[in-house]
Length: 266
Image 1 (spheres, rainbow, N blue to C red):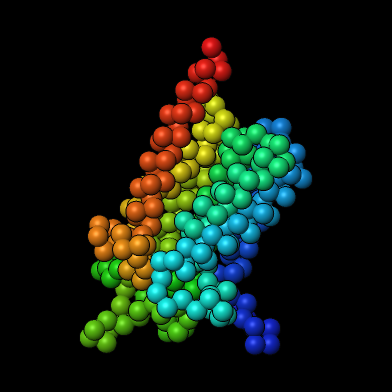
Image 2 (cartoon, rainbow, N blue to C red):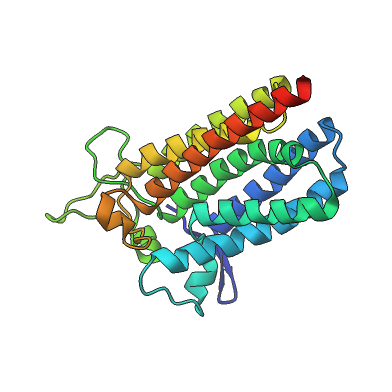
């Protein structure tokens, strides 16, 4: 794996950072195109995208601080880490909710424009995780098991050797999610073109991703902390617990939205 591409002086240019930046730019481009299709001003979509990224970064770091032990906030490693995705999702979502009122834009149209780009950004971001070696999976004997390099171990702590000293092969959980979210991106683009009501794409993304993440968590083996002791109590990971709440919230949201649309039609 190649966690670092090169250095500028003592500052490393990481593969994860490059993939993340490319994913964010592509996500913003897709959101602007889809938003324009729904009659939204592109300049406002770009403004929203910028603040959503900032809210997402803050949220991801905040949840990382809450769930992981011995996090050194004032350190280079903390700044370079990607944080916890669900924290980023919730932080970005909150930023959109607040700014949409300020910009006086229709919430559901904006959310539908951002959802496919979010899935595409995740697909690229997980490629960065794979290159860095973070978010690794459990041991597997399957033919597609991945043996990470010593450089990956030095950078993220990914295990590379088993108890017997032999090469250790792991589930490529990063690629599982990357490939799946690329397929989800295509599905959401199709749904955006054929949606029956505004907000449908957002709901579809939330439900699908919650199910995808809940499943992939069974194959992950990296330390992910414990949110208020819930992981210890339930035997589920932090992300699985959040996935359940996200899926439930999305279903409730869908029911309420459908009722609202029916009232508008009548």
